[in-house]
Image (tube, rainbow over all chains, first blue to last red; front, side, top):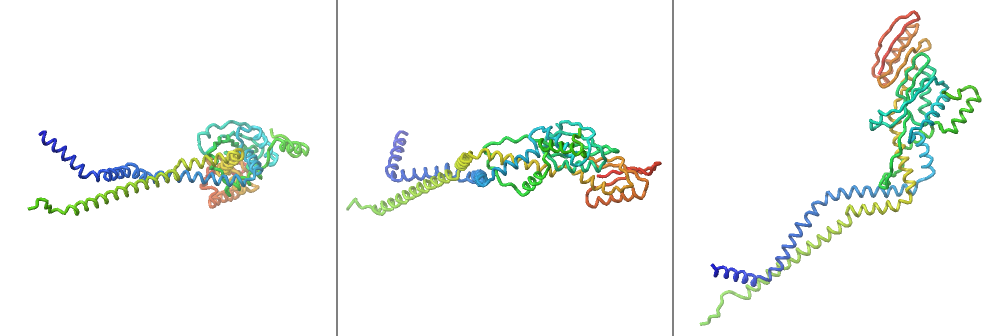
Length: 239
Length: 172
């Protein structure tokens, strides 16, 4: 048995000595195959998924580049004035003063009279993701359906933005339920820069439309009220 | 008799071994080079087309644009606001237009006693001394269904009173 083991060792040694020139190339071949299957194949197979991720990030990068172009050509004064108009149309908080001024202006423009009004905060609409928080005003005007319609026509052309949810007209009194919307400004993070773009045609038409609405800023309304009182034709205050 | 006679051609045997070794060496070098080259390509591709590389470019660009932070904020706020306003304008109910169309059919001899319009529909009570006038008004309201202003019209009641006739109509 011992002889056999020695023979085997000798045989292996002899085999090695006879073929030692093959050892290094064979080792290199084994290492090459190992590297190929351990590193290169997994990298190659994961490439499509990584490419998708890269494509998404590249698209984001391109958007930022577009934003850069928009920023370089933007008219800052125009943006200021448009933001002012948009903020008037949709205030960032419960703009009671603006709402009351709006109703006052609408009363003057529609030549109606307010009998009474009441308001409440509408919390339920917040549950609906498509809705905005609002102040609900219930306005009783003296007049029939025709006058209620005229009141709403004017209301829909006045800041801040509103929606009539009900008209009840009985005899000579019409009750109009109005939602005056508001919405807080969203928080902005640096990554949002990729969202900068030129206005779409629809957005331009929206800003054009609200630009034509009646301004109910306090100065204007005060002037209107003074004018109305002086003329004696229109009530100075609806309340 | 010579004992050094070897029938195997030693030169031929060693020559073929050398050729074999040379082939294997070439193959091993070739494979090593191939794997090394592929590794280099993958390294360069990963470096050039890596998510981190693109993100770095994004961050560099964002950093460059940070001087416009104020303008950026204004534009984003404006876009958001205009989007919200557009959405409200698209969705808001135009009861004034619907009511306006219905009132258009009310002739001077008809009096609107009661009128309601809300999410559940339109209901109204009208009175007139002329039954024909009420009939014409009802036909007018029915004709509005052609323009999809209303989808259904129901005559709720029609009663005679000392002052004339009272008609109650519901529409959706």
